[in-house]
Image 1 (cartoon, rainbow over the protein chains, first blue to last red):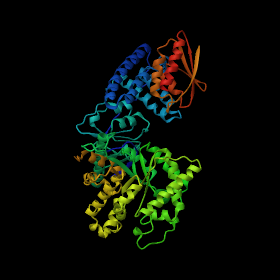
Image 2 (image 1 turned 90 degrees about the vertical axis):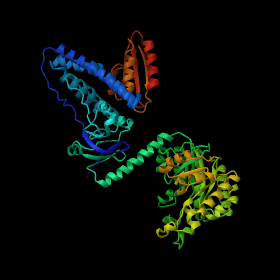
Image 3 (image 1 turned 180 degrees about the vertical axis):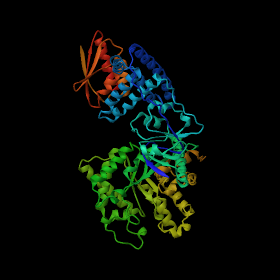
Image 4 (image 1 turned 45 degrees about the vertical axis):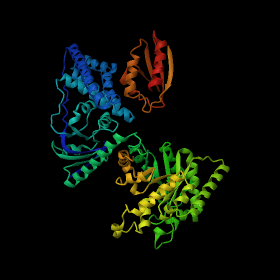
Amino acid sequence: MIKYQGKGVYGAVAIGKISLFKKQDTAVKRIHTTDTDKEKQRFEQAKAMAIQQLDEIYEKALKEVGEANAAIFEIHQMMLEDEDYNDSINNIIESQNVNADYAVAVTADNFADMFSAMDDAYMKARAADVRDISNRLINILSGNTAVSHHSDEKLIVCASDLAPSETVSLDKEKVLAFVTAHGSSNSHTAILARNMNIPAVIGVGDDFLEAVRDGDEAVVDGFTGEVLLHPDDESVQTYRRKQAEDEEKKRLLLELKGKENITKDGRKINVYANIGSVDNIGAVLLNDAGGIGLFRSEFLYLENSDYPTEEQQFGAYKKVLESMAGKKVIIRTLDIGADKQVDYFKLKKEENPALGYRAIRICLTRPEIFKTQLRALYRASVFGNLGIMFPMITSVSELEQILAMCTEIKEELKSQNVEFSENVELGIMIETPAAAIISDKLAPMVDFFSVGTNDLTQYTLACDRQNPDIEEFVDTHHEAIMRLIEMSAVNAHKCGAWIGICGELAADTTLTETFLRMGIDELSVSPTFVLKVRDAVRKIDLS
Amino acid sequence: MKTFSYTIKDEIGIHARPAGLLAKAAKEFESTITLEKDGKTAAATKLMAIMGMGVKCGDTVNVTVEGADEEKAAADMEAFFQANL
């Protein structure tokens, strides 16, 4: 197995046999002639034929890649009729007494050089368009017919580079992937491959072309730009899985994009995403999540060598809120301690950290840390639709202290004339049995609950999450946990609050119906599970 | 003779497609329409010459229209720039 690295231009995986794309030989001979009128006429005829061919290619492209991408072939027609291009060809025929083929080749070089020399990547890539139209003329002039691709199976088409018209002329049904040794991601070939939904990797280098033969097995990963030649069985298995997951995801996305998450009997459920860093926002949008149900603010503390400043935090929160453009963003305040340790907090080593000094317990005993975060959150609130969520709540008095601090921060901002939104929703995590059991007392104080099933399971079943030896005792579907969730849901709704689940159990689609029957309003899962959960919600009938 | 200036708002400047449309539109008029930027000029009917000027977003192009139908040609060209570039 040999691995080659190029640049992926369309993210998808292909596994199959290679077919080398053979270019026609466009080497042109300079032939002296006295009948220049005849050569000019040959050029005019070739041009008319080329324009007619481009009409056909345009029609094919229109059907396969849409109007905006087919437009390049109209441009090719216009380039063929460009005055300067035509003048140059006719001049060379006339002044040098040469054949039309040669005049076209020289003109192509001159114009392509002009574009290549420009300092703009887009314009540089246009040199390929000049070569493409000129080769078309030369092929017509020399009597070459278009190369057709004969094969019964889909193949990975490999070439030094592919001209846009060559890309579109290939029978799409026979192309598994494109791999080129050269080319830029700005080229129309790259754009067309993306629009034809064909995995494509460009710029793998000449080594690759020298090594491959027709019929060789290969894997093309358009996500990472990797091309594996003669892949071993293990790699093929891995890539088959990657391919199947990707196809399922694309199928769901196509089916669900823009649709509401409504059960068959008409109940609307919010399906949000859990993320742990600003870098994950792309994955949230790509998977078409309705919002962010859990944004773990710990990354700001874990990535830093000292307490993150208010400005640092404000910048990060503002970015998430703006990127989500008005969709709900629920940010959980600092949840450090237990399995997440940060040096500069100087936390003592504990016998039993899961039951120790963590999360809201740190925030309430070291209010300066908490107030900095709250100020940053409220200041950012004007940039979107913010919810703030507090972790590890066990009592009413904890929540009273938190709410008092929020009021204090708002007063402070008001007195300093700093803007904040009055519509920030406040909620708590239900992740201790205590919180679930007194949820009737907590619910009137908040806008929402979010069930953290990982900790709720650990605390309810007295099973350490970190201990692999007790895995058989961790029954995540345990009736005790289900009862605690249901109890919380009933109490939330009695007080007009909404309730979601943001733990791993939210992505367990065998439980989706159970949760919806309990009255759960929102499910927040890792971005990769969003589509799967949305699909499950839409198939449930609660009537 | 009529003249006007236009500052390009399209992110990738005068790229292939609008240059093609511009050339096509310019051919409809009798008047000679010339584009100028930083001393480089090109006839508006010449697709490759326009592309060769390398006009980018934020660049200002001076357009000169001269001929029998210059009134209408200048007005239409200005409208074209506003709509496409």
